[in-house]
Image (cartoon, rainbow, N blue to C red; front, side, top):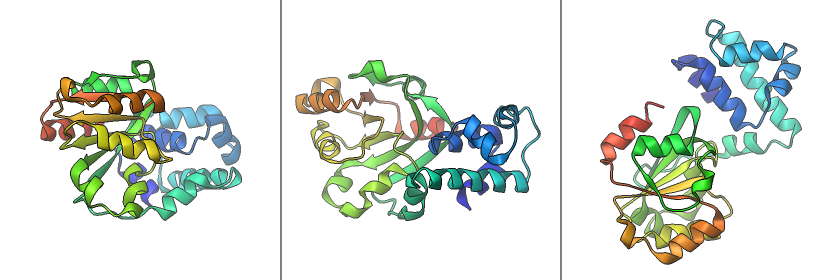
Length: 223
C-alpha cells in the first residue's frame, strides 16, 4: 500500500503519519478511539517520542484511516483509489512529508503575495508543477482532477505564464480549487486584472516568484 510504504521509508515517520491523518480529516481522539489506545500514544508516535513504528503498527494505522473514512462516507478513500496516472509531460505532483503553512511555503520559494494574504496560515501538503501552455491547450480534461494528487490543500505552480488569466479562468469554472497559485517568472506589472479579480473572488492567493525552477524544486522536495 502506497501510504504504508511512504511511512515506513520516511526519515520522519511521525510527521508522515500526522500528514496522512490530517489529509483524512481524522483527529487524534478519533484515531485513538478506533485503535483502542490512548491519545498520548498517537501523539508520541507523531512527535517521534516513540521508536519508529513497525510494520504491524503502520498497517493498523493505515487500515484505521480507511475504516474511519468509510464510516464518514469514504470520500478520501474513493479519491485515492480512483486517482489516475497522468503523463509528466503536462505536470508533476509532489507530496510533502509534513504539512506546512502557506507562509512557510512563500518563504521557501522567495515569493511575493499579491492577493489574499490573510490566508497564509492555511496548511498545505504538496505542490503541482504545471506547464500552463500544455495543460490548457493539450491536456485531456479527464486528467484535471489528477493535478491535485492526494489532496486539494496544495499549491499549483504555473510555468510559461504570460498574464495569469487563462489558469485563473480554468480554476474559476472548476469545482476543485488549490490552496494557492504561483506564477513562476511573471512580472507583477503583467498580471492580468481579471486573474486578480478571480483570485479575490475565489479566495485563491496569487504568489509570484523568480527563483530558478531547479532551485525551487530542490528546496520544496526537502519538505
